[in-house]
Image (cartoon, rainbow, N blue to C red; front, side):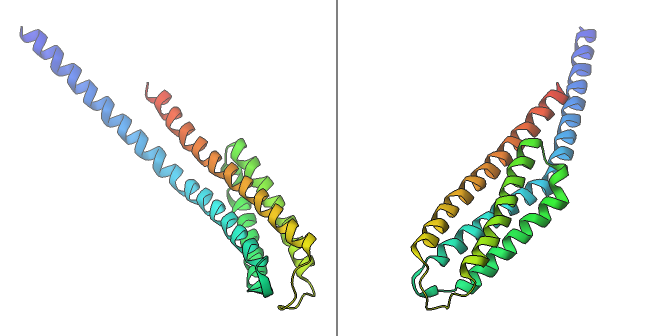
Length: 167
């Protein structure tokens, strides 16, 4: 009987040690992933700033057009700088989504600057420009969804990898 109790105590002790090890591994992995998840969230937010600025551009009477143009420029700069700093840390599916969003943002910025070039604040945008801006907003939304899906996949992969490691 004493051997059975001793055996149970050893199993409980091993189980507790394994649980502590698993918790420590999970904490370490999530701590390591947290900065990257934050950067991914910032990329999503940069795309949101671009969308908001595009919305403002199509308002009548040139409401805050210059502010919107500058906001797009800044958001694209931020998206590009963050990609340069963290792109190599991203899984392929997320790196590709972010790269495509960055590339589109750079193209969009150039065209916005070109389209708004000589317009006065009181000038209304030509219809083709307004349509292009609306279409561009939809494209940016799709990139934003790709980044969001990539972030969720990254989280899922992190949990799956941890689970495999602990088994």
